[in-house]
Amino acid sequence: MDFDTIAAISTPMGEGAIAIVRLSGDEAVRISDKIYKSPNGKKLADEKSHTIHYGHLIDPTTNEVVEEVMVSLMRGPKTFTREDVVEINCHGGIVSVNRVLQLVLRTGARLAEPGEFTKRAFLNGRIDLSQAEAVMDLIRAKTDRAMNVALGQMDGKLSKLIDQLRQALIETLAQVEVNIDYPEYDDVEEMTIPVLLEKCSWVREEIKKLLQTSSQGKILREGLSTVILGRPNVGKSSLLNSLVQENKAIVTDIAGTTRDIIEEYVNVRGVPLRLVDTAGIRETEDIVERIGVERSRQVLKEADLILLVLNAAEELSIEDERLFETIQSMDFIVVVNKTDLPRKIDLQKVIELANGRKVVTTSLLKEEGVIELEEAIAALFFEGQIESDDLTYVSNTRHISLLHQALDTISDAIEGAENGVPVDIVQIDVTRTWELLGEIVGDTVQESLINQLFSQFCLGK
Ligand code: GDP
Ligand code: ZN
Image (cartoon, rainbow, N blue to C red; front, side, top):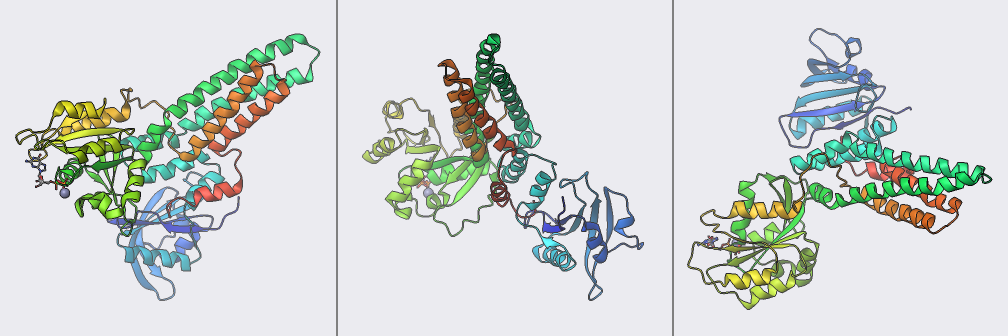
């Protein structure tokens, strides 16, 4: 395929002391040579592939030195995009890295669209669509575990499984073809239905298994949306602070300073918590007061987990009971705080109201009970499941939706075959399942979808 040469800053803005401007395309080396000067005068075009070189960038119009740089030269096809790639490593800082990018653009490269490097890797056959999406997940991964899911997917774990399922469906379809082509042989007909049922049932089970991992996968990717709830003064801010301090807060890339809901990520034993409305807790103490009844109801409704904080040194109030009512149908953990003070709360009553949910006692002042709380959160998330790294998690919303559709069509096929529906009708459902699974790996997707998907990527990836 023929592509022009693209360039972008490929390190996250403001991170680290080194920034990289990456070029990809046929002209990558030639453009670089126009602005790069090595101490010994050697051109990049004369250097070996996969080597790194020290030198300076010179603005060809003024002959001024722009930057001191290290330049990596990687010739295709052994690169991420399968094209020639040049990476210019310069000192970090937005000003200097922008200057390098501008120079590269003036010298003949085009600014890459978001996700365009990854898109090229896909279009050049280097990776399939689910792997491309994994790159995006990786960029956004909030914890090591989420990172592993993305890495597994990038590695092609999901693709391999999907390919196996599609292979089974193809074999089924081949059998059906034989049946349609040679209707006069009775034994072919007799064989077709059992083979079809066996293969399709296996595919259905595998799809179900994948979907079972999807809620966990999604949480690993997006964080367990968590709201700390409780009356004023019970210790919400203290809880927030101890969670944030003990677990390295994960920097979020959401530029949400003007939004009325602020989120903060913490990593609790591999479970990323997305603490919602931390600003509300810090500033006005009252989520309802700050964002209004309707909006806070919405926030509660969208939460995966509520941490309901109570004050052990006070009796349960009507307000507390009302909070229990509000969150009755949700996943919550009760935190009975201030256990260092003389206890006034009726713990038995709290346990009753908790209705089977975990009740943890803490003294945030004395830093007691936080570990138990964290364990309760992790236990809730993994629901006693073995934390197997072997599991192929599905975390991507698009994949989940396709799998749900595939589950429907394969179930239709199975039901039809069981109820004596003619095989050429059943065939349609099997074929549709095969197509839907193909969309996950990008085999059967239309170009507009591809464009839309890749435009979601961060710039420079
Ligand atoms: P919020 O209004 O729910 O956010 O509660 P804060 O976290 O701001 O805490 C209210 C007050 O209770 C502060 O003075 C805290 O220092 C105090 N506090 C928080 N946790 C404990 C605790 O475990 N024991 C005691 N004795 N005081 C606490
Ligand atoms: Zn507070």
